[in-house]
Amino acid sequence: MALTKEQKKQIIDETTELLSTSKLSVVVNYEGTSVKDLGTIRKIAKNNGSIVKVIKNRLFIQSMNQVKDLKESDKQSLNKMLLYVFNSEDEVSPAKTIFEAAKTIKSIEFVGSFQKDGKFLNAQETEMVAQLPTKQQLRGQLVGTIAAPLSGFVAVINNNLASLINVLKAKQEITK
Image (cartoon, rainbow, N blue to C red; front, side, top):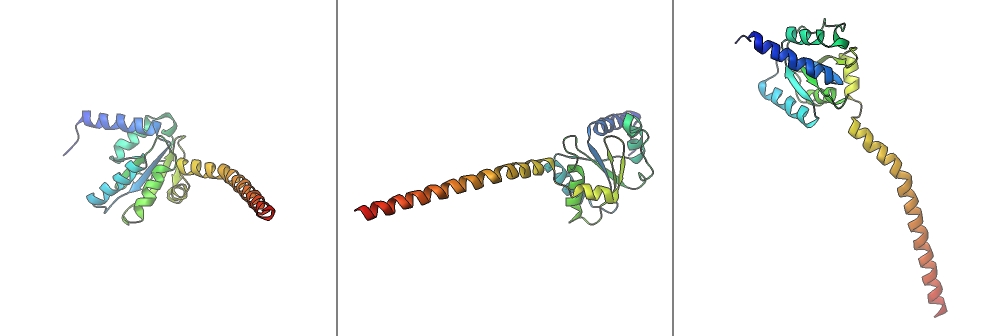
């Protein structure tokens, strides 16, 4: 069923908003992917805080042209059956969503991605981004790095206190 002009305008407006707020917009070829697998991708995306949209390439390009930083971006690779993944909170999550899904869904592949500043990353660069830790993982690593010396210090103090108590008990046994 063909889209009406009003529906197309609504899609363009919604996509323009997603593009302008997303830190990384990932482009994925989904040719040959079942509806069930698309549902799986959407579920993974939702868990990662990302949004998956299947948008006509022509409408996506029109949306890109409405975003100042994306007007001059390379649009030549937007020519197959594509879906788009957006995330306004994390630069890595959209790519990580597809990387994770591609482990079980062999029919999807990265085409590339658009950074917020308009730079186009090819498929290999996007896959490298997908392998980076997310902000949440980095925060956990930072907390672990900060806490490690503290926990070591506490262990040393506990061992010294235990040793002191053992010495005092031994001295008490001798004096009896």
